[in-house]
Amino acid sequence: MKKFFAMTALAIILGGNISFANTKVISDSLVNNLSCNSLSIGTILIRIRQEAFSSVNHLPFKNWGFHSGSFKLAACWGMGSTQRKLLYLLRLNEREAPAPNAKSVLDMVRGATLKTLFDKHGSSYLMDENLKAYHVVPISDKNLREEYEHNTGTSFLEVLFKGVDYQLDSFPIHRNLRTEIERSEELHFFRVKNIGMGAGSGPLSPHKNNVTVQHVMNNLRLHRLTLVNLRLTRTIQHVVMAKSFTEDGKGNVWIQAYDSNQPEADQPIYYSKATGHFYAPRIMGSFVGDTTGTDYTHPLGTFIVDEEERAQIEESLLKHYQQLCK
Image 1 (cartoon, rainbow, N blue to C red):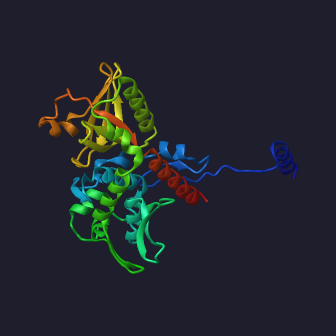
Image 2: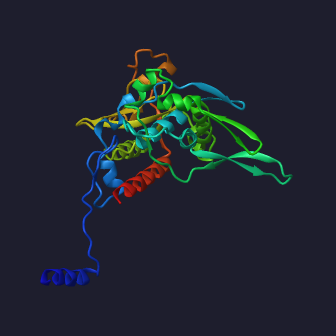
């Protein structure tokens, strides 16, 4: 009785509430030993498993070109965005997982859902409505590459490639992984804020590059996957996803990145402290006739893109683990 009274008195002095630490710990295919005590985006990120971003979970197919109106685009931005979402949001090897809701997953790939609106004449038309949140998707696949290559017709990616058919008011709709990656590419590419990347050509200043490399390293220390646009010329640009880095004693940095043209393994981006520039011959060399990936004489304009998209994913992760911690 005295102990309880003393505890209650202390609680009143400290703010009137008695609270106990949540001792629950969560492990899944993304995080290991995530404590529910003081849960935050930061604590989630630091508990991400080293193997969670392995290349065995890269999309096991290559970038492709397609027409968007009069423009010829490549799907690299849409693929980089999709790859990042899947690495964070899929929960692999969940043997009791129900079949994924393909339409819901395709909405996340697109970053929007389709809806119909009416013009002033009463005619309906289709419009993209940006997603307000993402969600975690448990699947039974052990990893993306092996299950897809088994060609059973039932893997997660094969289900997405088959797609969904439905009616939206008067519009018959077919959507699949390819259509949604292409639409994601369009939604990322055709934005006013991209003008700065398209207006110039080649590299940026050493000062700007130093700010960029520090930003990328700070992100990757916290497992924040970072989309990066590499600009060789005004018309030759390519989006990749930075995953990890190493730095030597001289300040030179090697960034390992997912490249949708070479998804089987990570590819390097090199930052030279001496020149203050970025180089990526194994990623961009083919555009200048370098088939060996060893020509470090073509500096690149390097831009970090879509930080707000990853922030939205992180908020969704926090809500997911908060729910599990209840």
